[in-house]
Length: 69
Image (tube, rainbow, N blue to C red):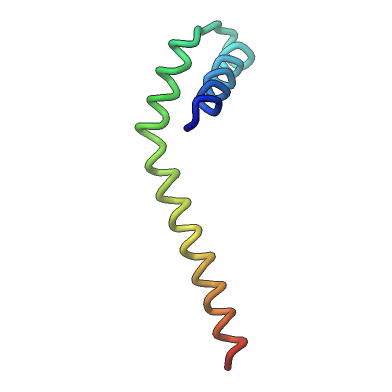
């Protein structure tokens, strides 16, 4: 994540805790939560995205071969 994206993500986490859990957390706690999410959940999201794009590209290639026949 870029510096700005990380800053925005931390702000979003802080707002979530304030609105949904009625808890006030600081920037450090928000960064720790973000780092945890990136480390533990990020690989699953990344792998799913890769599988989704592979499926999409395979469908497009199949469509392309359909036009050539």
